[in-house]
Length: 335
Image: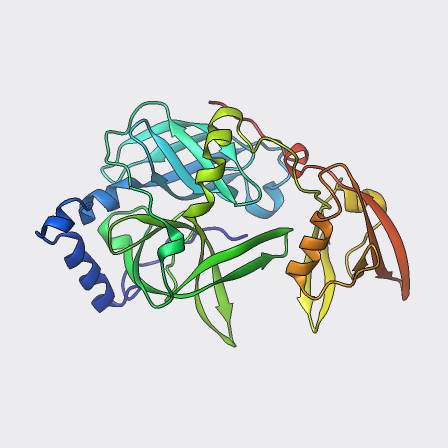
């Protein structure tokens, strides 16, 4: 997971892309008359500030004070953001581009998608951003990326890939959206189609020496199936996936444990940093994503997962009694 860095707006957008989409949004044609204007879209992207439980499990990695963007998605102040900005928060504020700031309640967090929800304590009197269908977006499509801060933080980009994404923290998206060039304030930023609809929420900056740098977005299609549960209960209803509490990196075809979460099922079972995951119940994973799927196939949270682990030059069978990660976190829904 990564924190937002606001950076400068100069040079962050291919101006031809930005200009073309803006022209489309403000077109006077009949079709465009039903589309949000660029000013409406920008105003729907708000600043988020959160204050985290000092005993929170995520404080060490993400800090006690967090800032990023969120997107207003209804007229009653419901704000969608990336979950790591608000997980374990006890208080939050949202700020509009006009300088108005308002307290917000914590509504819900979903570990599987990575989405988080806040609600301003009163309507923000801004036009919410309409939701699109991320399944319809295609590689090569031009898009806008907007973080809080007004028009100066709107950038043009292209969708460069739609593919699986596996994060080291027991996180997997079957299909994530990747854009380039990168936006400097990606956390919670809005990915907007040329029709002016929300297609995804900014999560990461990705790439390196051998890859084109860009951003990864959680597709908006992941929201609809969970929205009702998050509003009603703060989390998904029903059996949760088994969580072990390890960060795993894939290097040279091997899966190395890079971190063991304190007080997690993995730590209690004796898994250590530097261990190599050999198999899950005797089945060797082909990739990090395959490892997760094999773990999750063992049952639901609370079930025991048998891992074969290379530890101290010896392969050992370690039985890990899993749990629901949300029960490990210091969550507090205030809505």
